Image (tube, rainbow, N blue to C red):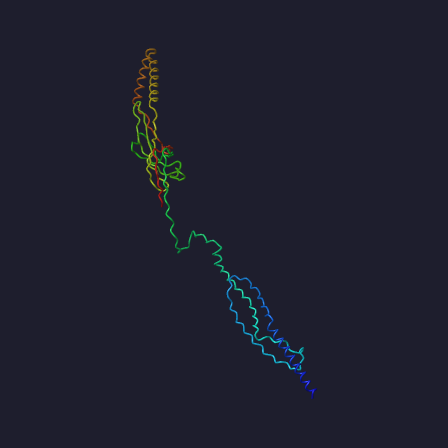
Length: 313
């Protein structure tokens, strides 16, 4: 009987020791610090990070309480210590945010617009395309200075016997007229002239003369411009030399006749008669006219400056 009681007491003591050990382990588990959180992997750099919705973590279910071991099991065969119910659940590791995709590249037309310069304007646009009218061109204005040389060629014959003061005549430019790089008149441009003075040859000592000048120019742009040049003067052949020749010839002829008739005194009388006859013939003869044949080249100088304004078509 005592042996049975001692065995029961020994079993109770062993059970108490086991319970005390379990309680001590549970107490140590509650005092242990929580495990450190798992470090999240660094997120890759993105151009424009946006918030990514993360699924809410599911709460961990509390661990079921373990049953107390049988008093007869040894402490070494017990299951691992349970997780304390009051210990906060470990935070799940957050997944790194997904990188934001880059914007798609611009279309080829937009890239060409940004990189290439605009095309040049079309010089000859197709029919039906409206284009702005060109700006009106301003006509040039220039002045032909005085004393400018005009070389012309006569288009008709001029004579002091035929022409009178006030008569006009035609001519053409023999050389182009160029001023400040502009061709005022090409070679062959029409020119108008006027007779200023016409003196026909007279009897005896009177000589012929003719004076002309230019009064108009037809320009390369189709304008008839009034001009005024200095006069060109032409003298006819001198009648004095012809008269002297005629008088001398008459004297020689008279002397020869007197010598044949009586010699000596007759020769002197014949010479005087011949001289008188030659002088009379010279007095009765007219001089030659002043003439300018056709195609004659003349040079005139502009007397007054002339201002021209270009005529636009």
